[in-house]
Image (tube, rainbow, N blue to C red; front, side, top):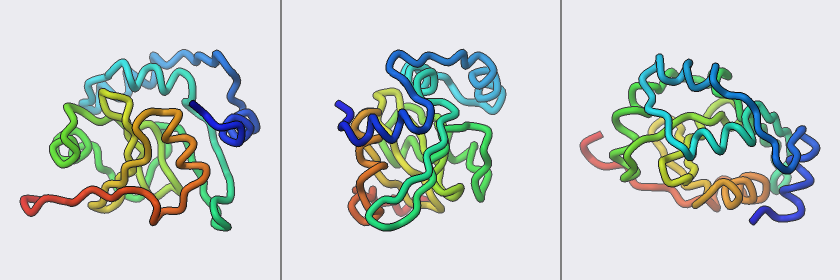
Length: 152
C-alpha cells in the first residue's frame, strides 16, 4: 500500500489513480532488444511509465525516471537478460527506468523491483507500492544489497 507521502509525490509527477497508458510501442521496443515481456512489467509500466520524479531523499537529490528510452551510463541489455536474473534468482528482468541516470530500475516476473548499477544489485521493493515508498524515503545504504557470485 502506498503511503500518503508517496501518493502526493506521484500526483505531482502526473500520476492519478487508475492511470493506464498505452504501451505497445514500449513492448515492441523491448521485444526487439530480446526481452520477454511479463505481466508484471505491463501492469507497472501502464500505470507509472514516463513519470519523472525529482525529489530530495534524506537531504540528497534523487531523480527517478520511469522511461525505458532514457539511457544510463552503460548498455546492459545482454547482462540484464542473461546474467542478472541468475544472480537474483528470477526468470527474467525488464527495465522500467533509472535512478539519477546511472542505475537501471528493473522488475521481475513477481513484481519485485531492483536497482542495477555497475555490478551491484539493490532490492528496492517486494512489489511496486513497496518499491515506490522505499524510493521516495530510503537512503541508498538502507537498501538490501545482494551478493554478486564469484562466477561473475
